[in-house]
Image (cartoon, rainbow, N blue to C red; front, top):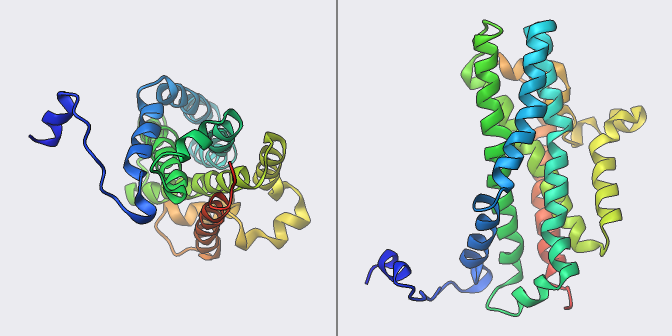
Amino acid sequence: MSANAAAAAGVLIPRRARGWRMGLANMLGKENTAWWRTRRWWTQCLIALFFLNLFTALNLRHGGVSNAVNSFLMIAATVAPLAAIIMGQDAILGERLSGTAAWVLSKPLRRPAFILAKLIAHGVGLLATWVVLPGAVAYLEFAVLGKVHLPIPGFAAALGLAYLNLIFYLTLVLMLATLFQGRGPVLGIAIFVLWGWMITPLGVALADVMPWRLLMDLGQAEAILQGQPLPTAAPIIATALWCVLFTGVAIWRMGREEF
């Protein structure tokens, strides 16, 4: 009997993964169901289209193409991460506070798989709803309303940086949610990091090791859109390393959590 036929017949198919991958497929299926078989995905799509594309259209009508592009990138850098912060902290804290995490981890599920399933599912969901969809709509807005065809490779690269920015905040709150028991510290620290660039001494001192310059540095953004050499690749490398570090700490801390 094939896997599809067995599933259709209601037959349970055993998962034979071992090690850190034990339970990953089942947990990932559960997280994907929460994303794509509920109203979450279209709610996130509507919110993203409102903030990113409605304001882009208004800027194209009243401020010109250059202002609209800068506005799109700024909103992607400062507003979109709020979705990652809110959903990421709830993915861990919500289950810890409700007792669901303890129940799930009593099953054949390794703790690294618990963290990675949430990271993968939320990462894919955010990519589709906050990067790909609004990015495609924005490109059409620039072409139809602004009469400008931005270089596709450059625009795709800018969207890639927007996604890296989102993953930074997603992994940050996943880590913080394993370190703290309450929502206050998790949300407070994450939002402070998000808006830390506004504190001038902090923004200047940490500019090259934080994600703030990925999209908010207009010179960097312009170079990416035009396919020109970047002024510096340090923020990209540093942000990617932060994501790996945050994920590693979250897995390490979850492995020491007592339920």
